[in-house]
Structure formats: C-alpha cells, structure tokens
Image 1: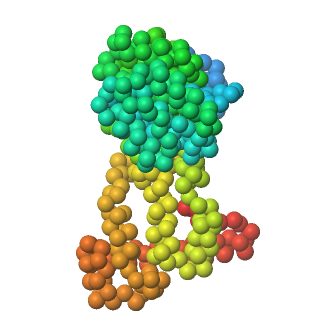
Image 2: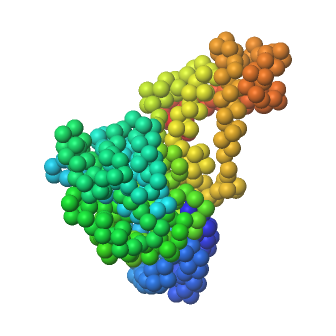
Image 3: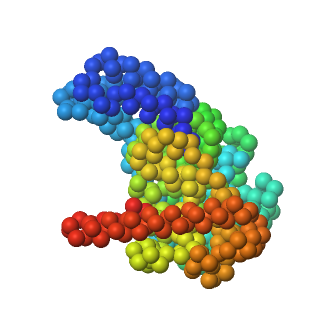
Length: 449
C-alpha cells in the first residue's frame, strides 16, 4: 500500500504513547517531532505538515486529553481525527444530476491512467450503484487512445461513443450527450485528452468542453506515484478548470503516499476514488476515516465487509457453514470458497484490512504467492469427482496422475491433502465447541463466516 512507510513510522510512534496513564507536554513534543519526520519522509507538503502538527499539538495538551482516563489513547484518537480531517473528513459522494444524464469530465496529464480509470469508474457505477454509463472517446490526439477505450468497453460489455479522431472533442462531447439522452444512459463519462505537461492548448480545449457540456463533475486523475508533482498538477488544473474531485491512481504502488494527504489540503477538493490495482474492479470510493484507520494500523473492517457483500454469495456461504458443521465439506467446496475469497482482491491487501494485522509478527510484510494458490486450484481440478468427494481413496498411483495433470509435484499434492485433512479436524473441533456453546446458551460462529 502507498502509505506503508508512513504507517510503520506512525504506528511505532503511537505505540510509545498508547498505554501511558499520564501524558506530559514533553511526551507530546517528542511524539510530534516523530510525526513531523514521518509525514515529511512520506512526501507530504511542508505547509500541510506544519499545520497538521500544530493542530494535533494544541489538542493533545488540551483539556480533552489531560483530563481523560486514558490520555495515551486519547492522543491517538486526536491523531486519527486530524488525519481523517486532513484527507477530507467525510466520504464525498459522486454527483447525481436532477435530470439524466449526469455528465463527468475525466481530466489529467498523459500517463496518469485516465483512460483506464474512466473504464474502472464506469464499472463501479454499474456494479455498486446500478447505473447505466456511456463511455465517450474524446481524446483524439494520443495514438490508440480511442482504441484503448473501445477495448475497455468490450471487456466491460459497455457502450463506447466515438466519432474517430477527425472530429473536434467539443463536437464529440456534444453528440455523445444527445446519444445518451436518446438511449437513456444515466451517466456520461468523457475521456478527454492529456498532455505530458499542463499547457494553454490543453486547458483551452478542456474549458470549451466544460462550457458546452456543463458537467456535474470534473474529476482530475492523478498518479499517486508522482509525489509533490501531483500536488502541483492538481493545483494548476483546479485553478484553471475548477475540478470537483480527485481520483488517485496507483495508490497500491510502492510509493510514499504523501501526495494523497497533500492534494486535499492544498486544493480543498475531495479525493473521491482511489485506484488500488490494475484490474477493472480495483477502484474504491475514498473514505478518509477508513484510510486514517489503515495508516494507524487499526484495520479497515468496513471495506472488508463491503468487498465480501459484493463478491461473496451469501446463500452459498450459509450452505458452506452447514457442510462444515456436518463434516461433509469436500474439495469442490474448498475450490468454490477459494474462488470467492480471491474475487475480493489480492489476499495480502485483504489481510492488511484486519485490525491488528500489523502487530502479528511477519504478517505486515506478508506476500501471498498467487502462483501457489493457482497450483492448489490446478491440483483440485485434476482430481476426479470421486476423489474430490472422498480424498482418502487417493493412492500413490492417483497422486502421480494428479501431479502430472496439474503440472505440479507429488510433494505438493501430498502437502495439500495433509492441509485439507488438518482443516477438517479443526472444523470438527470448532463444531464441537459450537455444540457445547449451544448447551451453555453461548453463541459460537466460525471466525471466517
């Protein structure tokens, strides 16, 4: 995640003060020195850091902390609240026009991931908000930009409006909105041209499109990896166009993440969405409070629940729980569960959303080997139906066949069979605990249900 370094530094600093029954001004001063360094190292704008440290210091030596029963925890609460405020306070919702369609202009420099983000946003609007978007190819200058958007449209099974690269972007936008009205689309996403740097021609054309379409949102797509440059770009676009929100891309990359904290404070425009990976469903609404929670190592259970609700079939989950109770859980069920968990996103990202995951030794730097999971899937898929239902019948000859069919080794097949057996034993124990709990009137749920 982008905030990895910052998160580590802040969490270590917070740990020193967490259990303190008494917090002195000297404690706060020392902590603020660490926080200042952590933020500057993460590439947060100097003025933003200065203002943040001042606010936290004032509140931390004030009455709300000094008179509290747990001053150490109260200071952490202050840091979390101010960090949340720095990133925008509350989640900023996407606009909905009084009369359809809602028009969104996607703007930004070349290379920020604007075209891909346009596709991701359309996918999110359809999937999460049940909307019907129309993608508009209005970047007529970058070679293959129109083709790229059309390819995304095909992948998403979504219409793309294009008039080629010989018609002006203003005319393309105008006709696209007329088409959207005729076909009852409720969102129009205009993918505009980018340049390698901010220039007058680019801004002039964007202003013309803005004047003609009167957009409900102007989203500036910014690459989080570009650090302070991202802040300068955001300021420049905002001064000339009046953007309504920012979409940060590559927030999952190996970057210091300071741009995300600075952009909101410098432009006073909300971060609306964050790109958390390359896949077309890897765009999330930006929640300042949840992000502050992640940075401070408090997990992000709400996003985890939302991912599960979107990607996991609740009926199948109930059925699975029943099978676990009755010990009729098979390799077919295991394969299905693996698929549902994988659909929620990269497993190492999911693990990091768990509260306290950063405190479990080694878990914070866990690298889930997706190749290993693919091997497991291949082994199960190479079994016959009977073998999946009754793994105890798998003899050495069958193991040899399964290993060959899955392109793995006999050792890997043995390891999976052993792990599956151990998992079933654990389920049996948990089922026993559940029965005892029922006798005593205590509810018990499987931890992963």
